[in-house]
Every structure is written in C-alpha cells, then in structure tokens.
Length: 342
Ligand code: ASP
Image (cartoon, rainbow, N blue to C red; front, side, top):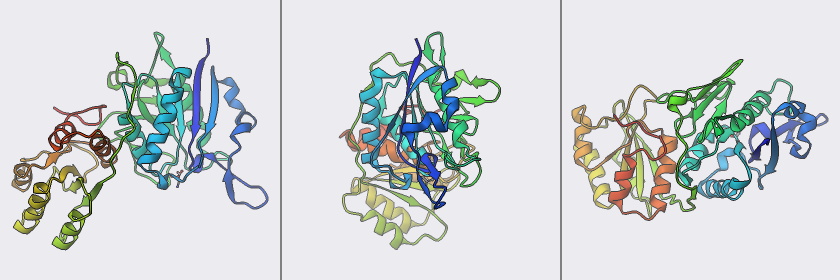
C-alpha cells in the first residue's frame, strides 16, 4: 500500500511563478502541479494537494491562522500518513512551534517547508525542498513514520519545528537550530539522527484550539528607558511578557528597572526570561548577580527556548485557562521537546 501524503499550500514565495508576459509573481497552479513538477511521479507515495484560502504572506500569520491550520491537519489526520505544509519562510518557525503545541500526541510527520525562490522560476530551491519533504513525510522504519513530529525542512536539513529559526534572508540555507541537533541530513542518503527524534506517542492525537494573544515581547538593550518599559507593561489586558535578556539571562540591575518588573509581576503579569543569544546554552537565573534578582522577583526561566517557540507556548498555555502559577510551571517544563533541562 502506498503511503498517502497531503501537501497544504498556505502562501509564501514557494507557491509563486513568474508570469512570462508581465514578469510579475502570481500564484502557482497547484491543480496542474504534475506538469510543472514531473519528478513527483517518481515519489513512491500518493500525494494530494490542498490550497488554503485565503493565501497569505507569512508576515500575516497569527494565532487564528495557526488554529485553522492545526484544525485542517486534525480533520485530515486519519486519511493521510504525513503532511507537508508549504509556508512563507519569514514566520515559518512561529507556525511550526504553534503546530507543535496545538497538536498534542502527534504521531505522524508534519513538515513545513518553503523556498527563497518561487517554485515557478528556473533556479528555485523550492523543487528540492518540496520533493525531499514529501519523501521524508512518507518515510518509514519498521512500519512506523521516521519523524512523528512537526519539523522544518530546508536546504538538505531537517530541524525540530520548535527549535529552528530563520537566520538568513538570502541564502538557500535559511534556517538553523542552535540549541538542538538536526533531525536528519539529506545527501545521497537521508540520514536520520534517530536519538534526537521524538518517539511515537501512545496516546491519541488531541487538537487544542484556544490561544490567548495577550502577550508582548520586551527586547532589552543598554540604556532602555523606564518609560519604554512601563509603557509596554501598561498594555491593556496584557497577561505575559517574553523578556529578551542578555547572555545567560542578565538584565539591568538598577532599582528603577527592577521595580517596574516587580510592579508588573504583582499585577499578575507573567514574565519569561529568554536570552538574546541564539546558541550556546540557556538562561541560568542566579549565575550572575544581575539575574539572581530576577529569580527572586518570580520571573520564569525560558531555559534555551527560542523566542519563536516561547510566543506560541505562552499563547497555548494561557489559552488553556490555567492559573498563572501553572502557566509559569509549564513554561519551565519541556512539553514538545522545545527546551532542554539538565
Ligand atoms: N514574505 C514571504 C513569506 O514569508 C517570504 C517567503 O516565502 O520566503 O511569506
């Protein structure tokens, strides 16, 4: 029996082609994909295509789009062995992270990919990305899918979805994952790093559909003013803030700044400390005196989470209607392999 893969196009550069007359980019005709991508016939799987409406540039994604996409996958889950999501690269890492949280106990591959050049231009990187993603989504070992998790595939590398981020706007190699090894590398063979891939869950898939977007990001910089900080904390309905700190989680130690944090925590705003350093470790509250105070104020450690994953993890936990104490507790515990705790 051939494996069945559903490819879902959501928007972004990959699904574009150049109009020969006008020279402008327009949507790629997915109904006619086998004519444009004849290599698809060689894949040993049955591949169906869905085009989501409306198509969007990925800069326009939000929590409603994530829930819609997760629901689409959930509704088709029993009919397919794996999913490939074609998505704009700009916010692909946010969407991949959101899908990780919304699809609990995922036991089939959901692989997001895109491209730097449209599928309908000669030198496109989209062709390899889409073909390899479909092949990985259909791949099995001992009858089980090789990667039963949400991933990003780009330029020969497969990453855990909630660990990857876009770090280059021009290179074909646009993504990286500083704090977690690649799940697979594609050359002549597809080499899976099986010890880093999540195991098949024993429980049934659960779809979560509630996310609370009353969060904000506070990026610290030397000389940040009290006014800027207090304005952010006075945002109406604000429930949580991702504070992007320096190095191992350090922040200014002046009393005025710390007081603003204390006031926010006392108002019930959850503050999660995520480092601006992309790799090489994690937030370690208390390693330096400048972060010990943050721990004393009840600020949560994001450990080595990416900001991209912290955004959807917070929206998901807040949407679950948990108490603040529970949201704080779960932020420090890996739910889908998004953080490493020693
Ligand atoms: N702006 C596009 C998007 O993210 C870029 C891309 O697809 O790479 O939707």
